[in-house]
Image 1: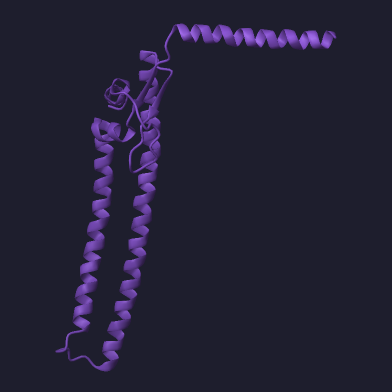
Image 2: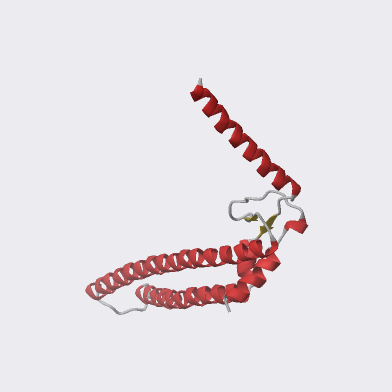
Length: 181
């Protein structure tokens, strides 16, 4: 019997505590905001710099690949030239050279693609953390219980609908720039 009384008392205490917490929270409306992480990256100074760095990194690799591509086209064209006075053996050697260059080109292309994708993943991870810190600072300053990422049509859309007044993207952009000068 005593055991049941103890359990009943604990249950009553827990329910009472939850009721008090609910009453306290009900007196103050829960404040929730939404933001667009991609917009923070695109509109903030620090985000623009990072995106420009990524673009330049990719363009540098693309220029190398384009030069290699042109070299391969020129080499192939020389091989197919009907006016070429190469012997069969010389032609075969040139074709072997072409195959070797093509394989090297394909390896380089694959390596560059992996490098660019890795750099993009690293940038996304780094800036997601920084954006989360800025969102947390906004939430703490302005009394938000949560700030949710809206997502985009290209990624998972987390918030399907929200009133425009809940959007704190501009405030997060300002805080993000303040934190990442």
